[in-house]
Amino acid sequence: QVQLVESGGGSVQPGESLTLSCVASGDVFRILTMYWYRQTPKLDRELVAYIRRNGTAIYTESSKGRFTISRDNAKNMLYLQMDNLQPEDAGVYYCYGGTATEWGRGTQVTVSA
Image 1: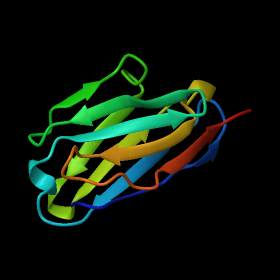
Image 2: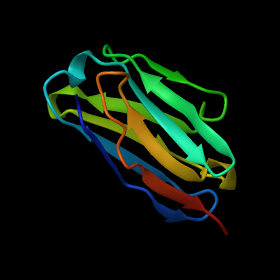
Image 3: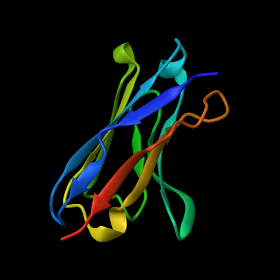
Image 4: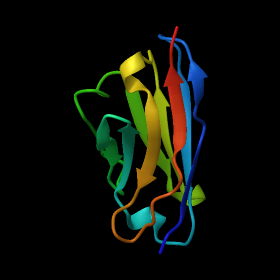
């Protein structure tokens, strides 16, 4: 299975930005639809955005207009640019590629004044 390692989280103030990264092992990344999920203490993992192998990006209502998902298939990399972060965006962010991938450890995002 493809292993995933997330990075780029941190502690920011409302209105600031972060870019999350996810590196995938193996050579099947380029054919996978890749997802970003967020987990909070109150909720199970919720979908934030996903990107098809051709680069088509799909956002949820919570991420639309503020987040940008992208990928670099040559580098096996997935990204999530998050702008104008708000406290409700806080949580542990995971990338995922479906049953061909293993869940990583995630990266923590904290947003507070």
